[in-house]
Amino acid sequence: MGDELARHRHHLEQLVAERTAELAEANLALAQRAAEIADLYDRAPCGYHSLAADGTIVAVNQTELDLLGYSREEYVGHKVGEFMTADSRALFGQRFAEFRRSGRVRDLAFEWLRKDGTILPVLISGDLVHNAAGEFLFTRSTMVDNSERRRRDREIAEMQAELAR
Image 1 (cartoon, rainbow, N blue to C red):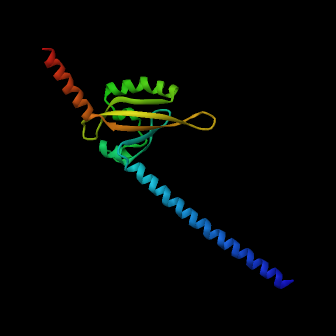
Image 2 (tube, helix red, strand yellow):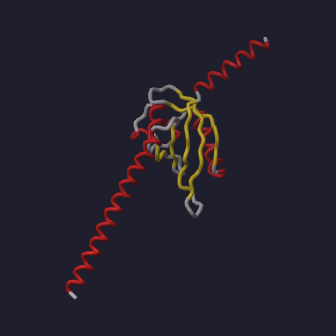
Image 3 (cartoon, rainbow, N blue to C red):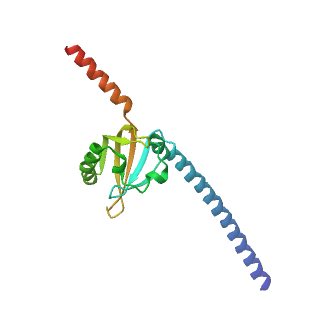
């Protein structure tokens, strides 16, 4: 009976060791995948940020920080309006309430203030993220540099004015 019990205990210990190794391998693969996704988020070709219900920036990718020249510490935890021109801040105040009702916005034009004081025209698109109960959690938004499009629009307007003359 003692030998049978010892064999059974040894078998159980082997099973536990196998499952522990499988779990460690799965956790490593999961950690590697999470690091890949975080890297993709940070190096995306556009800026990404998330806002809390009160407009506080709760997350941002490195692309957006690079576009604007701020460090993560200078940006995250601040109200998004702090980084906008006065006109854009007013527009944001109007549009954010609409956004919270509709749950989605596309290509809203704002002017962001870079750390060096220059203005960056951007297009913002976003979606609201809710919990299972339908309560607002945060926004998930993209930021795209709109400088080139603005320049082209000005050139087209100038050419049209010239043609009209």
